[in-house]
Length: 232
Image 1 (tube, one colour):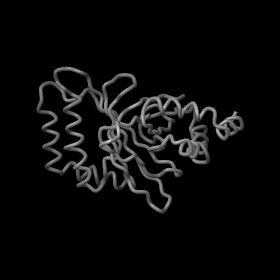
Image 2: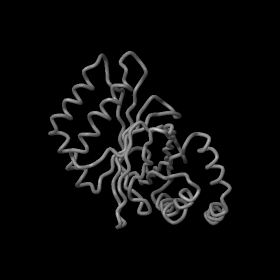
Image 3: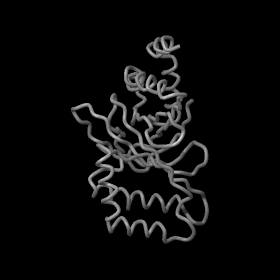
């Protein structure tokens, strides 16, 4: 089953590609909010950009991306994406954040407004695919309009069928996305989070019209049709 949302980035950076093929860990957080006099979207955005992002940098990692909801259920919300080289590095970062005085002040600022700063925060931990171990987000440009990103979740019936789907991405589907210009951002298998077994991935487009056109191109692609026929 596929479930998706479309989001536009308001903060992002690209992680450098490494020569060796490794797998990394991705933490995806969804910051649920509501529109009210509490001004939750502005307060959370200020924390992410001025509090969390620099705190992660001080801890030795990057906030790979932060995205504002454009199309999807239960908005408004933000999605943040952080990449770790290992689970050990993730633990080290959590420890450093807890002792970071500037980050604690950012938390206090987030909490200092009227009412609640957000509704709830949901979190999932993913292991990146071998075929794309690192997050890749297009560099922002002052002359470029906000890009559109699509976050998709594929829920499988069993872990065996999920492994088969991961292999299909690694062995061909990922390359089709890249060839058509759908600009993959990441692919990951959920190891901690709801609705398992599932995998998640994100694609990037110039705008919604480009998104619709590229998915039509994907559905009509001869290589995809050949692979789909073999799968079925």
